[in-house]
Length: 427
Ligand SMILES: NC(=O)N[C@@H](CC(=O)O)C(=O)O
Ligand SMILES: [Zn+2]
Ligand SMILES: [Zn+2]
Image (cartoon, rainbow, N blue to C red; front, side):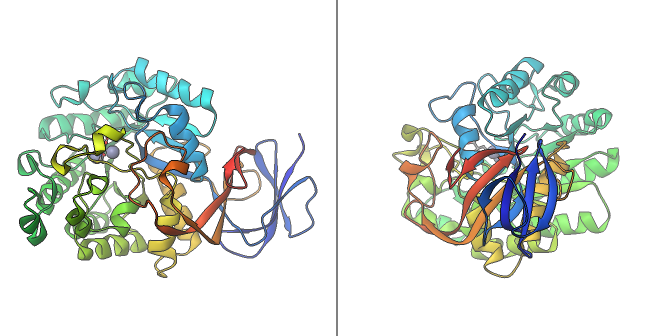
């Protein structure tokens, strides 16, 4: 097989080298300009390990009008991802070996990136009894992450049993931390602004109380807990304490919670409606600090495509969720790199290494060194682009960044040495 030479690429933003990709691996790392093979000009581009998303909604099966595995993974590749975890809140729910294998197979057929299906914790996401976690773990999809995302596993006994169950195969429970009674009918962050706008508030304590309980539960049974889309300063503080105690607790934050805040609700444009809601500016700052100091392990998109009719009309009736795959790296650069909070090695850790480790994904999130799988993204940090919803690969249009200029453009993505994206377009 002929080699691909990423000419003068800057691994983790460091000095330029030639990265030679051959037979699916990084075969050589040579002085810039000396590698031979089919050359991709990477002069000025930062090379990172292919991004890994812990939290993607691909909507198939069931809502193929909003997204399919094919369109969602295409968006993922264009965003620099070489693997995504596909959330279980599909229709039918991914709560059996059959459904997770179907999603996994669709991902393989599409070929844009690896698809790791997430299994539901409870049957039908109903929070009544455990799904067959073991059967999903042993299926061809090799599920390691389980989540009722969209719903909270609020029953403490079920949560305890789930945490105990996944120990057998080194799985993790990814909790959507939302106390249901405290958030009935909630529409936006609870605070002075929700009062002014007349929208029912979603209090921080509804998230923090579930995280605190789950940390205590997982410490009690000695299992692994992952917290989805952390959104408040208080959550960061609780996680910091848990980590100081050395507990096996990990957490993710979304790009939108690192950039946008509750004031966007004043537009009453439902594109800004998301769960958990956009919070205060102080929360955004605390989340950025949490990513910078490692309290928050990973950045996960929570890419949540919705069909037009589900986002149009009144705020109260719109479904929550926003697109994220094609803008995640740019938003991370804007919120963290350009503010000096994180360097490119830190971005690689939060958007690739940590998510692969948490999801126990073999061959992903590996260093850019000789012998490792050639999963690579090339990004131009000096580029600027304006987000045009119509130009996105996702089947849906609900990006909160329409018309906004963002820094950093994904130029190329390689999956085990094969280009999935070249010159910013699908290869
Ligand atoms: N984030 C959202 O606002 N919506 C998600 C569900 C979820 O992540 O809770 C969805 O499935 O649309
Ligand atoms: Zn969720
Ligand atoms: Zn989600």
